[in-house]
Length: 144
Image 1 (cartoon, one colour):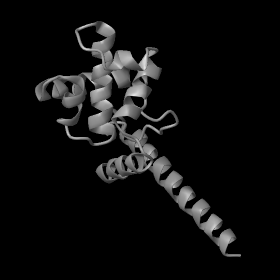
Image 2 (image 1 turned 90 degrees about the vertical axis):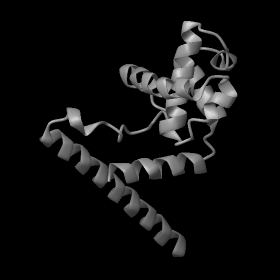
Image 3 (image 1 turned 60 degrees about the vertical axis):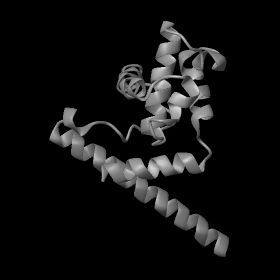
């Protein structure tokens, strides 16, 4: 179920026009840097942190192949793989999200108690039901 939600989320983001350039602008906003600094080469701490976050959101958020960021950033595919893991730690440690009002539905359930895990799933299921009912009401209003 979680994998299906993640896949739906990826397609929804792509359909809304999210791409590598959008991710780069989002990274620059959350890290408080200029957009050009995200693409900067070198081993400067801020640039490395920006690349890691960019690689993580590109690979996990949009499901882009790990061969896409290296072309733009001038890094190797193994470096992207490491950056994805490190970018995840940055995003989770500082609470960064690719989409500002994104609900953290990708919370790893392994660290939750069974009660909390079930409650988390119930909340997400109720939200999905509410969205469907709102859409249905809007369609019914249009038909009238």
